Image 1 (cartoon, rainbow, N blue to C red):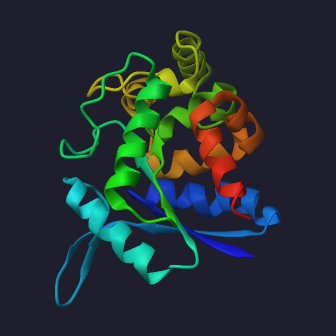
Image 2: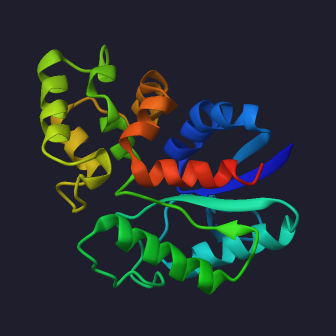
Length: 216
């Protein structure tokens, strides 16, 4: 068995890793542990979640990589709203898959740890929930589910749903479902969709999962 530590942004990702990703990878001989990023440390407390600069991500990844030299470290950060000082963030390749791969490569080079490989979610975690809009039942009304499906059908894949303050996947869900609660819905809906469907619909995410499996 090998350990994999996934540095992530918040409780939504933590819940998904614990209840969906980790159980899927366990039969491959992998223990997967989510770690919510510590954005501020004081003498008496740690403040977790949210990322305002890449330097904070770099610091946490360096600490984890050095602490676990014989294990593996990766990430689950949204490409949407990444800090402006992220290595490679200026890349604007029209092919979103080439763009994200280039940015991840730049970050890996910046970090320089053999046991650490970065993963960015296209364009954010909530894109995975568009892999099967029907699974929002019974948490959404039928007309709301149809609207989620309409959004999904307008893009090549869930990972192509664009990123802006108004059109990112989470912003669309919040606009469609008034009672949408990110932390609760994220894990519940993802569990119902299942990894097989998510992997089939989300090419970049599937590539990351395969990379994790390859270290088993």
